[in-house]
Image (tube, rainbow, N blue to C red; front, side, top):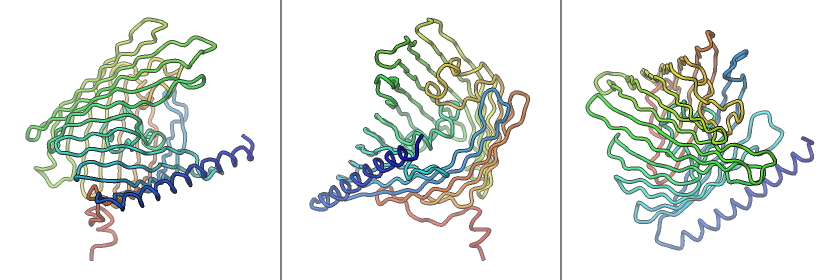
Length: 373
């Protein structure tokens, strides 16, 4: 793409950001005239993800790196109703553009225990951070950071049930119509727990296509039983679960439904910021139509196209508070009778004046390396 075209696109994005900032400033001034509370949040999220899958048939080698800026401002009333607006901008390392991706944020939030409700365009990390990588791969958090739709949840302590809708693409002559409908939940009984994750992805063709395309409906669920021993020991995390996944995939132009089943187990051990997280899958090959539509159709990790796959994450949390989180991960991937490598480094900073986030003292590695006397 010519440099002049890139500069024009960058200038347009910068112009959009300026207009949004002015709008938020005026909105904040207008809020101060009322008795309601003006609320705000801001974050900086940096990531480096180097995936070494040379020669693999199920994953590509690549390096993804960038930084997000996520300011929001809004209004809160009655201590439970909130309206917020802002944006998420991302600059990729090495890019000659100032802004590579831009996502508007504007949503209504109700937090009235035991209920939570969101509607609009809001950060995905607020609601869907518990889903396994079989459903959403690592890069989704960085390249699709907002959910456009709604989310409802009933919760009590660590128990919860939720349902959500994410409209990911509006149909045009060049874009497919696509949306998710999902649900998940967890129930704890002493040291034992059961959890469930599920979604259905609807992927239709473009408007007035030159070549007819089949409409896809993909469903995937995972139900697991687990044990959590962290509260009974000195570990920060000590838990394991095993579950069964079931999927249905269909291209309506072909008419055949593909039934996919598999076993998925997870083990997580963490102490003072040092941790191991292992996932193991054995079953049918997922993502039947990946060669036709790739990650337009599938948001889960493409390594689950393998019939057997194991991933071991070895990680260090240098700092972990409600505000700052710096984490380094070295991952080993075992599939296709090969071992592949991945290195990740993330640094996040999130602060607000309404979700009770504060710069509390870390209890992780940073303390023991630099702060303890």
